[in-house]
Length: 255
Image (cartoon, rainbow, N blue to C red; front, side):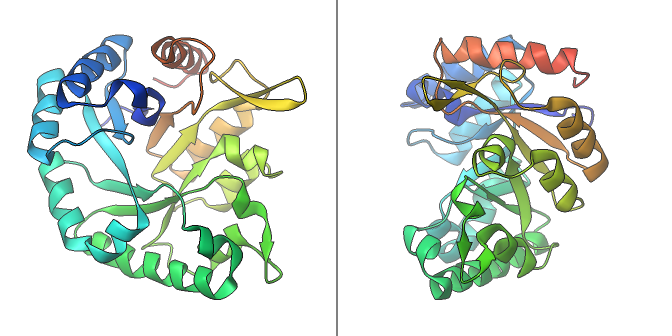
């Protein structure tokens, strides 16, 4: 799998992942679309051993997961053991608690907790990342929340799972942020944005308004390992949306 760079974020398909049988069927469909890897997120209850068997049976590698902050901070050893079962070396926090978004003291504690958990995961030969939305581009106590997350943590312990859609949504430059976080990005979320009737709309990669050539050029230079396709909401069948994004990324030179 050393040449595999494209993966599907399963959160896109969360409506089809309620039971172990649903998960198995969805893994088969995602593999048939042409993806060789996936990020586990939005799945219903399933034991790690059963999920690993589904992964092995379908040939769809679990390259990363999303976990909540409480589990990462309070059940770190269990998290590590579960990822060993999955054969998955990468995990990320999908967001932060509401209190940390509003209170500098709570945010500082969250940041330190991330670094502590990330150090333990690094000792276990794993990566630990933070996945942004757009609220991290607000200032709290005079600093961007993004700058506090990445400026106040050890890059070896806390990596970035940068989401280019949400960077753009927050008023940032996706390519510039990829360059800024070079060397600490194993995972990158790819989704596109369009605009309709006074609101932003999620779009398939290549079907919206993001400027992809500089984003992908910056990602290559930054050492991104996994380019993970996600679409929070789809206007068509989400499997079709993932297929369109994959086709467009192939045409952009990602395989």
